[in-house]
Amino acid sequence: MFKVTVNGINRLDIELSGKLDVDEMKIAINEFIEKAENIKNGTMLYDIIDFHLPSLGAIAVKFSQLLVLFNLMRKFDRVALLAEKTWLRKIGEFEGVLFPNLEIKAFTRDEKVAAEAWLVS
Image (cartoon, rainbow, N blue to C red; front, side, top):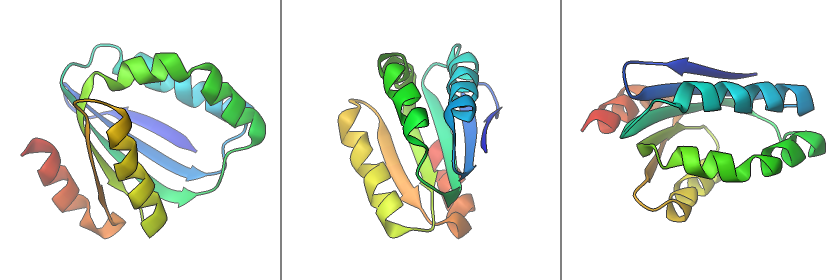
């Protein structure tokens, strides 16, 4: 499951749970593109509830849209990543290096209040 919710003028909340297949990845990317379209200086709360590697087909779909997704990430200044697994938090923060002017900070899922406070600080 991949759910994108608009939370205010310039914030998106994303929830990821389970394994994404090709069709779910297409829907997820389209939903993200649609909801991120009008964002400027945005923030994002990305909650990884239950992570499973996506199917190979889903990964191929994501790679086919990589340029579009990279361009959309320029609309965001900060991403707070919620995840229980340490390796997911470390990879998430490392991804911030790939995007100039984007700060990614990882939190455990029980630190949601702190993550939301950091997004507006």
